[in-house]
Image (cartoon, rainbow, N blue to C red; front, side):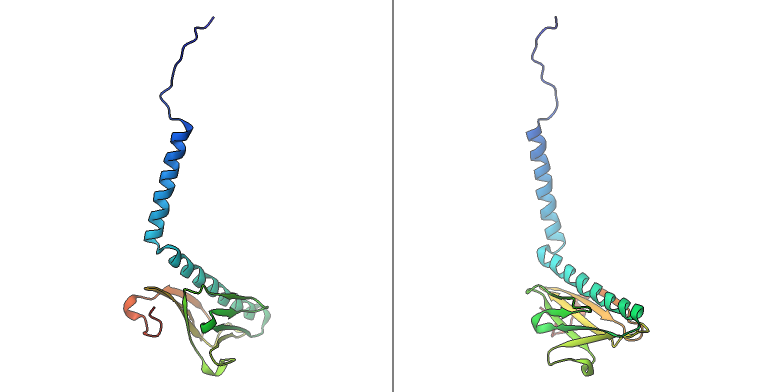
Length: 162
């Protein structure tokens, strides 16, 4: 028969492990929030990604279909309309400005970028700003290429500065 003894191993209990994991998760969340600009930074990057991908989609559709496609944006309402009825809005804390061809403006206060069947476009620039951070989405008129990048603080136009 085996003797009955109380032997405690030198490991950690489940509760101790859960507390350590919770502590690590909390510190990581705080670090990400402070380094990445928090929720505002996340919202701004998400808006840049959404608008940029919608512009790229319109260009791809123009090339594939052989027909021009139009993307419109209303900065005051923070709303955009893409192709095939696609539309969206930008978070209320994000400022939006548009620079583009005046002749293509559908209505007052609304801007448009047209993509042509050969991949070219009317060109334009959309600036998205929150606090001290500004991202720009550039659409090249000759190639229709859509690029997004963060604008250095010293190059931020006065009308865009938060």
